[in-house]
Image (spheres, helix red, strand yellow):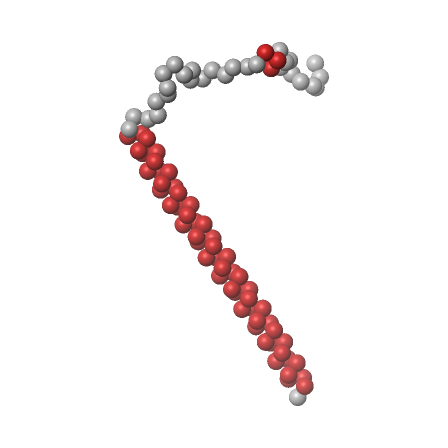
Length: 87
């Protein structure tokens, strides 16, 4: 009789692990679903925002603001183009 009780205890322990593993997997699947859902909502919001900007004529720059100029401080403009290495 003691052998049956030992086997039964092992079955219960393994069954409990299976339930815990299933619960963790279920929670992970639900969380991944929520993440995918949030990403989808953000994609839709980004698309509608982009369409709203394009339909209003785009984004205008302020008058007198330079579009593509970068100002370099004096020390940065005097650095050599190749740093280290040979030559």
